[in-house]
Image 1 (cartoon, rainbow, N blue to C red):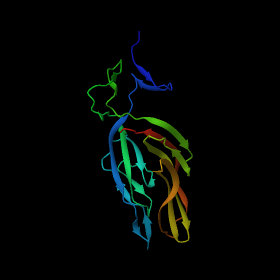
Image 2 (cartoon, one colour):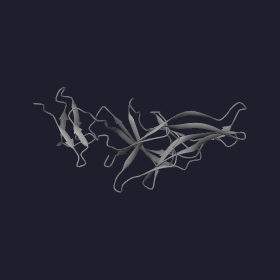
Image 3 (spheres, rainbow, N blue to C red):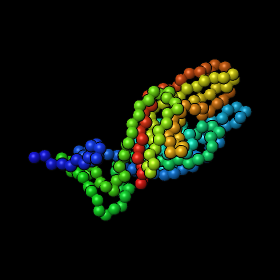
Image 4 (cartoon, one colour):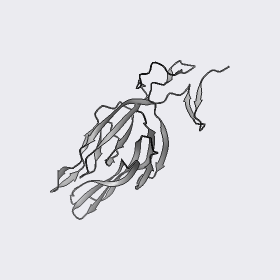
Length: 221
């Protein structure tokens, strides 16, 4: 007879399995988005780069709740803003496979793999709770997602577009950006910088990848 554990929610979706180990919250923080611009109106402006208040381990999953538009990137050290952006703040949630005891309860549930005895679930872990997944075209813009009342969601984004356009003597950079406003996530392609271009600079798309979006429930974290 095989032994193990499976826990399913009332919707029938598997929540806990003795053979599967989920990611959990490694660290979270809130940091300011200073707004404004770097550079000068005489030669070019670009959004400020903001370093995270901690170092994210390799292969981390980062999820955000930014109050102003931020430029998505694949960097584990910081995030960019639009030029002339208003000031705001951003919450960051770092999930890893190196599970830590986020909660400190002395009673709870612990599950081990029946074959390896590796711990695969602990109720003191703040596990990764993905509530929605979306796959959009890389240049998608004007996308919105409403957060249910009483819930706190963060967003993790992959892919998107980085393109350059020209107008007269100027070169512009447009990127996939995201923020939360009025309990709604927004994803748009917006202008993040400009400069006076060289004669040989032309419009082109630097990168275009399918846009992957994870909506993560961080209520209580």
